[in-house]
Amino acid sequence: MSTIYIAYNFTISPKEPGAEILIAELGLAGFESFVETEEGVIAYIQKGEHHKTILEDIQILQSAEFSISHTVEEIAQVNWNSEWEKNFKPIQVDNLVSIRAPFHENPNLAYDIVIEPKMSFGTGHHETTHMMVQHLIKLNLKGKKVLDMGCGTGILAIFAEMKGAKPIDAIDIDKWCYENSIENCERNHCKHINVYEGDASLLINKQYNII
Image (cartoon, rainbow, N blue to C red; front, side):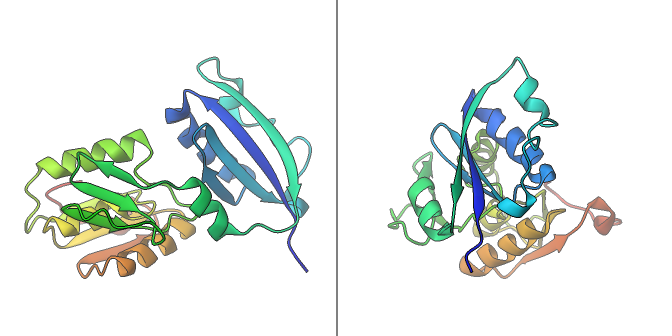
């Protein structure tokens, strides 16, 4: 029997950091999957977990700093691979780094990062992630100890290894991010990244050159 989902399609202005804040709040409210779109984000929740007042405590919806509207529809079954392929577009950073999914063509830049984001944050589309990749491009990371705190998809840890950093610790409090980071590290053949599920208490007495 197919799981029935309720899909909320949000249009957000400005999209960043609005989408990132909204996703974080919706995750706490019980939404389990998110797909970014050009205008905002689609959030999915199982019908059995949904209720009419589910958006009442979402603070960003009350904020005057953002204009957010949404539509709602019921979906009998979600093909996640199809949703990711439809909405996750490859990006290039400074014509040096490509960030793409496995189904995208390799543009053959200096660095090629392949991720399958699923529900995790960090596709390169978020302004903060994009800026961090730009910053790492400029740094000499060879042999440096690096921490990716709140690693999401693991994209920054993966890029750090590509630039010669080791060892690298990547940590996230979210179980899905933890599992997705491991998958993406394996997908990019990383050998020097340790992925942890939890908070900063797991890193006591550890020291890093770059965080």
